[in-house]
Length: 81
Image (cartoon, rainbow, N blue to C red; front, side):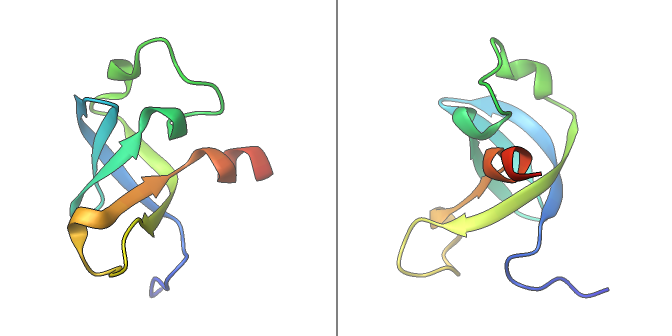
């Protein structure tokens, strides 16, 4: 069962940081607070330590391999399902 580009991943929320959460999907990536759920939770810190599924990696820069430019989104897949 090999993962392909565009496949959803899962990861564990390791900590709350300014503007969102840090999620470990094999590498630490940023999940913006606006993408945590359909509606932004009052306290995103409650997600710390939880495993999240249905995360979609995307690059915000020219190089998808640059981890500094890697973020994950979750909200759109929740709305579409």
